[in-house]
Length: 202
Image (tube, rainbow, N blue to C red; front, side, top):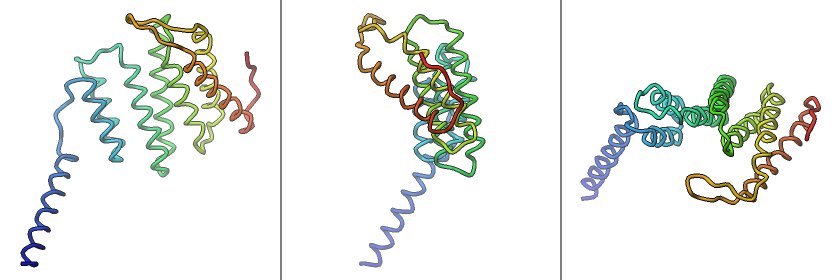
């Protein structure tokens, strides 16, 4: 009986592993929505399959069904995957940092083209991404911190009101303003500690 049990247990474990491998590696059909593309990207990133995660979002960026107004967000997500890869896979850090920078730049360019009068929360997110790039041991540290500083300072005047109303809802800005000021103070300090050229502050 113990031998039969061991055989059964081994067969069960083998079948489970094969099923898991099939789920992870069997080619999936193209995503049918942005939400599906991003969900698949997150799962692949968690599994350490950064290149596949990037390909999933890049594939959706080429899909005619996508909402082109969200392309900036998608480029941000691609950049964040490369940022995670730079942290986890130091052997390819240089290329990952370059790709993250390029995709943050694409996202920022699209947001600038929109010329929105809104809060531009994306400036905070992209600024935070550049700050994290600067935290890596890279030669472009000062450049990344400076990009972060500029984006944080660009956002600051937009958060002076107490509330912001969009799509029929009103949001308090106090906590967001405090968070932005925290990151702005931190990145100014990082610029100084890294021995970066002095910059004027408002």
